[in-house]
Length: 136
Image (cartoon, rainbow, N blue to C red; front, side, top):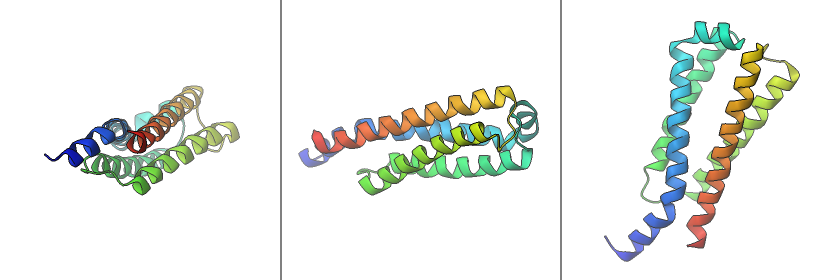
């Protein structure tokens, strides 16, 4: 491996880990929502059809983020898109709880805020990782 590739790989390490972790958690969530939409609906509140739709989106999104994490050089534009979508997801989740739009149970509201915090942390880690690609 050439020195240039080694430096690029080292600079991408933190961002790659942040993206890969996001992909695993997101994909896992999507799989649970798809496979267990009925019981999860009973626990969290939103209807099973909505949870299936969210689950399908999360699986596709998680796969896309995972694919991005495997790139030799991660596109800053693509990384910024993931960060933006994670921030949007975080804000939308909080808004859904605050407005009551999704008719969450108490457990559902707590779960939604908790997962919003996790997604917000992923966004922050990805921001740090993206900065590291420029500062090393």
